[in-house]
Length: 256
Ligand SMILES: C[S@@+](CC[C@H](N)C(=O)[O-])C[C@H]1O[C@@H](n2cnc3c(N)ncnc32)[C@H](O)[C@@H]1O
Image (cartoon, rainbow, N blue to C red; front, side):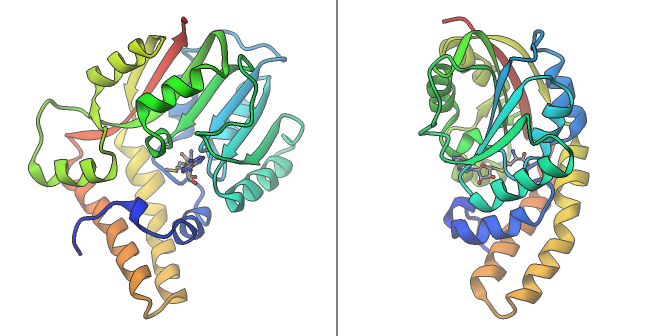
C-alpha cells in the first residue's frame, strides 16, 4: 500500500483495534518507572493526570508506584471503560479514575496537578501546543513526563522522513524538543530513549494476533485491509530504520 498516516483512518476502527490490545503505543513498565524516578516526592495528596491514557497500562504502573490519585483521560470511551474495569480488578479504584474527554479541552482546574503524564499521545494535539496548554493545569514546580516520537539523528533517509512527517508534521530531534520544553516554561530534567523492546515486544508482536483476528472479523473489508497494511508497514519501517527514530521520554519541571 501507499504510505499514509494513521489519523486518516476512521476513529472508531482505530480504537476498536487498539482497545483489544494491552498497550496502544510503544512503552513498558520499566520505562514508566524509570521516568518516575526523575520526579520529586509525591505525597498521598498528590494529584496526577494521565492524558491519552488508552486502556491504562501505564496508568496502573503509575498507581502502583505512587501514593496519590490519578485521573486518566482519553478521547475513546471504550478505552476508559476498560481502564476503570482494570483499576477495579487491581483494587486501585479509589485512586484511579478514568474519564472520557479531549486533551485539548481538559475538564480540570488551573494549578490542579503535581504531575501530568502522557505516553504516546501528545502528537495528537501537537508537542508545543500540548506543553503550553497543559502547563496551566500544573502547580508551580509540578512535573510533566511525556513520550513523543523523535528523530535520533540530524538526517535520515527520505522514505522514513516522508512517513513520519505525514504522521507527525512537527516531529523533531531530541535537542529541538528539549528546547521547546524549555521555551514553553519547563526546566528539562531528563530525556531518555525507549529501548527497542518497547516497540518490538510490547507493541508490534502483540499486534500480530490482533491483526489476524481483525482480518477474519472484517473479511473482504477493503478499509480494514488497508488499515492492517498500514500497521504492518509501520512495523517493517521500524525494523529497517530504527536507528533514526523512536519514542523519547521527556521529563520537565514547570518554572513559570
Ligand atoms: C498511541 S495511543 C497511547 C495510549 C497509551 N498511553 C499507551 O501508551 O498505551 C494514543 C492515545 O491517545 C488518544 N487520543 C487521541 N487523540 C486524543 C485527544 N484529542 N484527547 C485525548 N486522547 C486522545 C487515543 O484514543 C489513544 O488512546
